[in-house]
Amino acid sequence: MVNGKTYTLIKLLGKGKGGYSYLATFNNKEVVVKMIHHEPCEYYTFGNKIEAEYYDYQRLFKAGIRMPRLIDICKGQEIIIKEYVKGDTIFEYVKRDVNIDLFIDQVREMAALAKKAGLNIDYYPTNFVVQDNLIYYVDYECNEFSEEWNFENWGIKYWTRTKEFKAVLKKEQ
Image (cartoon, rainbow, N blue to C red; front, side, top):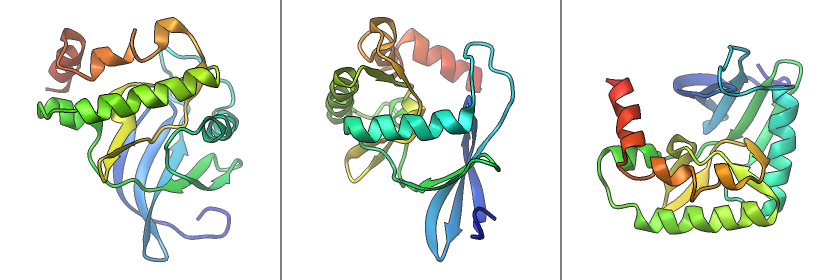
């Protein structure tokens, strides 16, 4: 129950640095319910996660980044309801060795929009879902722009079958 509305959880979609995302239904419509967690993350420092998610969503929306619409938020329960983007992640495409040239062009367009707004998004390929040949950035995380963490210097390493990507695959097995 979020803000007086009952959502039915269907399945876990994934766990990130900040929360667990579940496919859910409300009024026969699929949505994502993201529940913030407070598990430690050795490589990232958080402040108030729910406030950061909401603030980052606003910055990304203003920058023109294609992403799922924020439907509802309950700061007290630390839960976000967002549009469900149905499709495979870029990670799954790369894992199956599918040509993603079309999506590389799209993420570069997103990267340019983010940079223009003074931001970096998290370019890790599990954060991008393909629906109708368009990629959506399904995470709301963003940070101040830095060349070190932009797509060309960091993200691209995980959008192709590089040693970095293969190392992640190896950890999965």
